[in-house]
Length: 518
Image (cartoon, rainbow, N blue to C red; front, side, top):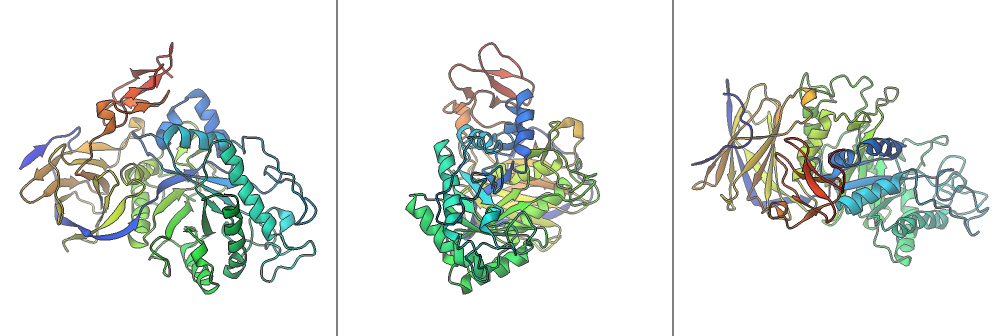
């Protein structure tokens, strides 16, 4: 048995649980689209202010290979004075006067950094509502079932509005991959800033939107319906099926405020994906967000690791998006960011990092099973990434460490470069980094890996790891991006004109000429 001693070892175990997790690659589930966030709600300005003083740091936290490596960005399509159609053209058939400032409340800048700087391919633009002049007094889109307006049928005008938004971003060399036209429609009302809709009313609009996007030669996928909770989205999806409109939806989207994802949404085809497109901490005080684990409060890192696991494994979601990446804390509403504007990363960021950094877009979830002993406290999942690596996620919810043997039941595990495991446990906030490599043992004869999963900890185990492009210097990091450091496996060379400079043990960054620090 070959022993791989990595960067950090955990102390000797007391009261250790033992368990075996077996991977079955012949059993497959959903394909992953990734994990992401939004910089809407004015938070793009917060991110810009932070980036002004620390040019690369906030984007490294969110999108670089050394950190969360988020792969989805969500945009908000404004419908009022800050939107692209601030005034009514007078009637649905009148020529609209669109307004485009190339900024979109800071979101163009964020999207440019994410897509062109870090290669984020999935950008989801969502309208919370049609412009107010397109809605009835009750808050529904004029022209859908039970929504007759004196001004006429505005469905085509709304489809044109959404399509034009995508075209404006294309003008900025940003490709929007998904578009949505509703936000929590089941809890909206006549005075809401978002739009009320039931399944039939959404079905009345979907064919028009699909045809309008196609006529503009856009391949943008349609998402629906961003219900406030999972149970409501299940009902809306069933309603779309009854109205013969579900086939027009590429991605079913839901939030998790009023009910969490608990089981797969039925009636979907193999090509239709399901996302949690928004959720966030709504704890007003957010007092335990500095803790990976303390008492099991919802805002702790381990709680978020479990929340994402349950959505992916129990409900079959292909993506999970946090409400705001970098932004101001909001004690009044309870909505909290992943990273505060004082550059403080909460422990929930590291929970997302386990998932987003290691489970990449295109990964296929594989079957896993565990021995019965302590099965209720150990959660497990496995994914086959497009690069050939197999990722095993282990969450130990017990009060004692757990010795786990991971068995590759029906596929070979490569001994070169060998299994690598990263763990998150409680750390001091001042350390600022919550993922450390841990020791593993590899038995080539049984194709198994042994490791210890800390109490109330999460471990990401990499099997059959693909060769890292950065190790050979075959890829180039952009200016300000990370290019080295302990535990970093990304590009280790910089674009011409910049130099890789060591900042500390964990970070080396690409600096432009004449610059050696942030």
